[in-house]
Length: 629
Image (tube, rainbow, N blue to C red; front, side, top):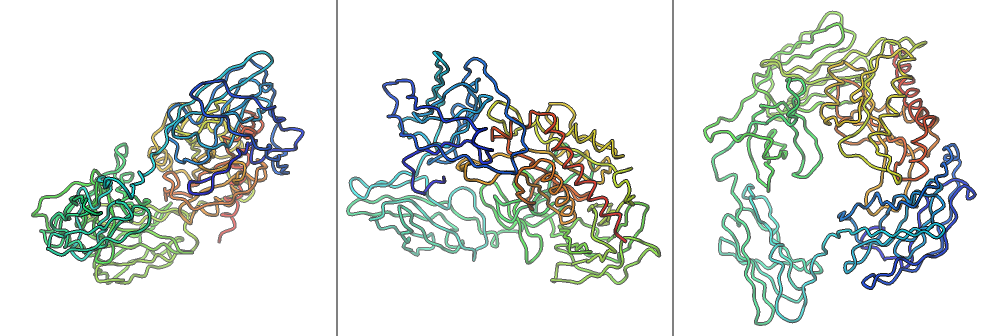
């Protein structure tokens, strides 16, 4: 349940979103009051236990083994003093140490699974008692535990009576801001609903702020009107409060400045692996992956981010720490693309375009074509020279899409399999990988497959303490065995429990010239999602279109072998899936926080099924490549 919705008076106890037949689920315990504490809130009333859902898909999961050890009450989530992302209802899970235990949390009976695991969906404790109170009993033994939590503070409600109160920390703009004069800026403050609020701008103009509900007041003004700090005045009766806004640097009224992009991955030492990351908005998703050393004009500042110009029609944001601010006398880079060549090699074909200075760029896939956009670049392309015999690139067309933007289209003889953007001493190189020659009878024979056991660092943990990094390493090792038995060479990004940097995983695969990349993971829910009502099962992720057929094939294999509900495939901007030299996917075979699925992941036979599902999908994918002309 998410904040803002009506809070339920009764708690729903969550067994598992995919529980099996009722006879296999733990029976609800009788009501047990929490340990008496004078300062504890009154116990919450317990709802009737939620019905157990029978799902044919989960009937194939192995039985949860019975564990009847001594009481050992342990809460995995939330951890002590965890800051919860919601204030209404949330899940809590862990283990009692015994499947014969009875458990209550905040006075609500919580069923315990045969291995001692529990998972409950409960109201978040109140502000005046931010803690969960647990009590487990077995026979004459009893154990109690207290888990303190932290709650995100709610915005203070500013009173309509009494002394005038204003939220001084809510004033915007604040901090370092730089924009063009005609760009709009929000001036805002939190003040009582029955006040009047105006802003005296630096140019002498006074504007009224509009009440937007609650305690929100705001107005949109031109950035040029905030060249000097403005004054917000809040009045109610005889009381008044004045607050200063930040000033906005006028980017179009100051000398032009330029930045040089830095390498975003300090572990990437070669030009091929280095990258600079830009976003559509300061806190947005990754969108452009450029060469370090690319020089771009600085056009805006917001907090710790710079806005830079890719060309006259497009701007993007980059973290200030990811750029070097150049001297004020730096010149505007002038980029011209010259006559291009298509050079055919044994395993790939290069489109080579002399540009002199590194341009901002983007590569996109469309059917059987790769589209290369060079930003801030003018074309002087008169000739495109082709190799006589090339099985990859049919032809190349280009257009000057805008006065400073070129679009090259590489028309291929089949759907792209892999590509790489390179900078070679004044030449932009788009390297197109040749589709491997596959024997349909033994599709994996001779193939090089990168297997990536996800995490550590970070990663999820199940109710009985199974860590995601350990569980997926076991699956990945089974996958390696299966793939090698089918003729493949396997490159593992991790073979031990120790952490491997996220960026290193893709670099390992590329340097090994892997022909497919699969990252093995397990799923979990964010705060505020009721696992009893939410979907769970198996899903697979991809980023580039070239990996979509692999994602579909692996998803089919996983659903057949694992037997959990099919949650489909997803486009997602995930780091390990963003590599372009090979089809790259990420699998979430099961939900680790669901007791039945966590228990299954401890079972070697289930681990083999997870691995076999991936292997079957990879084999199906490469068999499909054998059918290409």
